[in-house]
Image 1: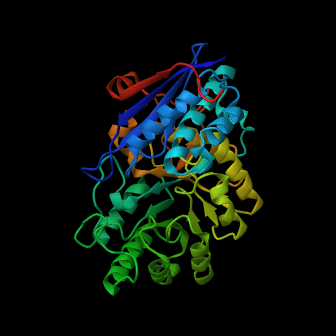
Image 2 (image 1 turned 90 degrees about the vertical axis):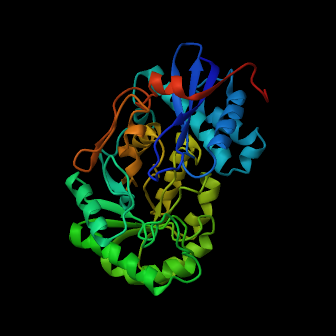
Image 3 (image 1 turned 90 degrees about the horizontal axis):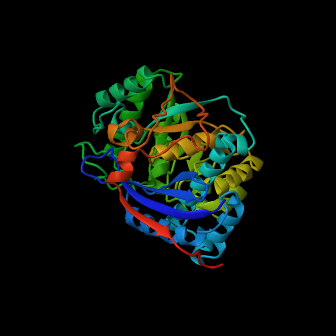
Length: 400
């Protein structure tokens, strides 16, 4: 089997924040045996979609003519023979990830089995999930949560949907409902601390003592301000504390870990085994959150997870893209013994994202069943492909 062409697609999705763009960059890797595989590059939000589109196009040229069964050889070529691959970074690894996921999808389809079977089989029969980012509410309509009553209602919506764990960023909206309007670095004001605590207290009050609460800070805080906030939130029995500071300096996480009892989590902006190495060696993280669509795909994510297992570090894959991201993540989560919980993002409930793909994977009573379709178990719809900006890459492979 040989890779004959790669379609690179910029697919329009739906963002949680009104007015913001949300484009999912996907690839369809085609073969001479008529089997195609789908992958996704993990930069759907923020700045970088067009860069990822271009990177996927460039990466596609490198793998033409290769056997998709040889995922290790493909990964190594993309990493080592593209020159910039060994330097890594968001866009480079997003491109590698998209191709790698598609290759695994082809392998599963060729053998007629879900990818988890090829990764070693299940260690988890079903997967606990949490309602992620309830500061956007929880349901098919996204909106700003501002008042304590808003946070109680969002919590109730998630609980009524079957979840016993939620994640919330109590500082993302200011007291006027403006997105990211607060300065959250340096020193937090008493007003900011009070409002953030009141919001978390409202979540705890509505959810009761058995609700698990994850605090998300998106790295908008720094060492000082995250420690200020941690000192008032510890009493609410926080499940873990996500991205309290910028994501690439393990020394800062070690400083925070030494001054709070909250378990620390990070990883959506840490790329490859090389990026995770210092966090493992100083064990500044209790939970890692690699994104399968930007840290190197299924091939690399499984290796990162196996390394984390050596250090007794748990895994919650970061999932904030399209339905392909969810499907690929479920395949890996089925296999790993250090799985903690699955992130079900508010964006996964929005109609504009659900309609992007053929299948709508949602948890039932807070738990996912593992897809049993061959491959990753997800494909773009014909309508999505027809409406996407598309480039098809064909021709002789480079760097042979």
